[in-house]
Image (cartoon, rainbow over all chains, first blue to last red; front, side):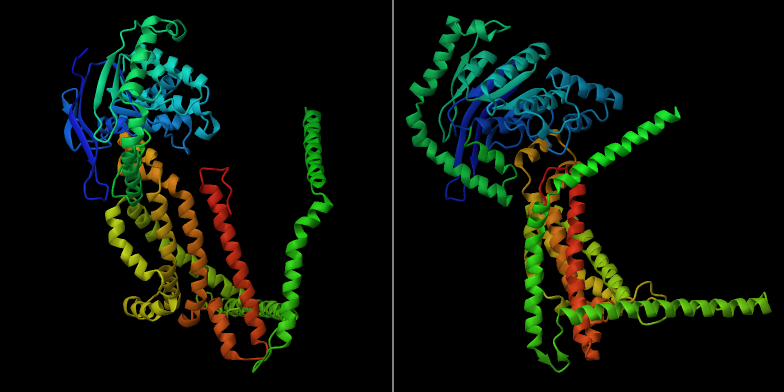
Amino acid sequence: MKANYLELSGVGIEFETGGKTPFRALQNVNLKMAEGEFVSLIGHSGCGKSTVLNIIAGLHQATEGGVILEGREVVKPGPDRAVVFQNHSLMPWLTVYDNVALAVDQVFRHSKSRAERREWIEHNLALVNMDHALHKLPSEISGGMKQRVGIARCLAMQPKVLLMDEPFGALDALTRAQLQDSLMQIQADLGNTVVMITHDVDEAVLLSDRIVMMSNGPAATIGDILTVDLPRPRDRLALAEDARFVHLRHQVLEFLYARHGVAAATDTGAKPVSAARVLAVEGCDRTDPVGRSAGDSRAA
Amino acid sequence: MADAIASERGAETLALDQRFEQIIERIHPQRLVKALLPPLLGICVFLGLWQAAAERIDTSLGQFPGPVQVWQQVEGLAAEHQRARDKEAAFYQRQEDRNAKKRAANPDATVKWRDYTGKPVFLDQVQTSLVTVAAGFVLANLVAIPLGIVCGLSSGVYRAVNPIIQTFKPVSPLAWLPLVTMVVSATYTSTEPLFDKSFLTSAITVALCCLWPTLINTTVGVAGIDRDLVNASRVMSLSPMLHVRKIVLPAAMPMIFTGLRLSLATGWMVLIAAEMLAQNPGLGKFVWDEFQNGSSDSLGRIMVAVLVIGFIGFLLDRLMLALQGRFNWDKQAVLR
């Protein structure tokens, strides 16, 4: 286990808004992650959580500071930092199998034979319990299943870091719990390094080794980091009445609502929303290559 | 064994019969009337109005043709077609006989073979028009689709090309035609030409006019691809070619087809004008010749051409729709 596996140092980002001054979304974000660690990012909408994730993914370029993964600076997106998007982002015209195959054929086209790749695709789909629907189109399976396939596609790329942008945000509570358990199991087996954005305090405490709590934007930064030292494997039923779990949960809630309250969020949060809108419009104009994800920062 | 096959066949035909019955049952007479009545009524009213209006219009070529006169011209054209085909057959028969006789007299004799050079009949002209519009359409889209994809992917290229698109898009085919005619005459100087110059001129003019709808729609379709899909592709680090093949093309397919349909409709409209002036032996030339001919049948015959042009345009659109259904990944999509 390397202690400084993923390192964000002094990361800040500004977006051109078309106005006189650019919009500063993030400022001085510093974070060091160990290999195999599970870190959640939590904060109010518009605080730039997704922007942090997109910078790690290489989809956004930090205006200052940078990201170092295993001793190398991140300059562009790549399969070593696979992203699970909130709305699954499966190609609707490809079957479940072909969606994963698209990634696997790209990453392992030189290192695995055709048969090995097929086995690897099926293995990863079995990992998320989706081996029963290999030849279905995304429109033919449920939202939770789609997200499972999205996770399988990312796992199949064998990323150094798995980035998850509110992966279970669009799912109903029961499906979400099932997928959280699956993710915990997979992470325990494979030892993935994971950065996950979430709005869900229970989810953050249940899954994470550390919870990074972000202050409100503009110029958002890391407000506090909470270490979750609950022993693994974790069981959601047992934890629900566990005093340490309840205490950790309370600490996150206190950060979100007492120290960085909702009133403050609507006050200062108004700016990032409008700025993000401008960005989204520019995205249509194609001046910003990842306009949509910049626009998403308002949702995060 | 044979019995088994026979009984299986019997079951099959039984199943077919049942299905047929089901279909018949599903077609309720009431529903059929409901479905067919409005369009039939519409057509009848139109024919009535046409007849009434035609009776009141007197031109120097006689009264404007009503539906009945036009139908007579359809029959006339059919008879003309038959006569021309008979004449052609007779011509080849005579030639065959002559050559056979020659060969009988002297086995080494060189026999001449001449193609029939009679006046093209209406159906030949329809065929020429279809071939010409197809050539122009294909030519245009060989340029428009790739260029549209590049414009959709790169805002720089789009901004470079957009002013040119916007300038040339509204230009009438009649403005292009003299230029195209001169350029074709100057550059296409083969001694054994594969195509007629009039064909090339018409096809290129069609291409110049039906380039734009596909180009613009492809650009919009490609630029409008879901950002998340594009980001997913970037994370996978797909090569540009693979990105276009696996993500851009399927995602933009509905818009590309919208463009193609508009394009074909424009092309077909433009073609008639182009053929009139370029004297390409198609429907346009038919209309022009009838107009110049100025017989008492001319207006009726032109009206036949008008209806045929419209009907073929409708069929071409249906054809594109069928193709779209074939190529679209989303088989559930409702196509209109």
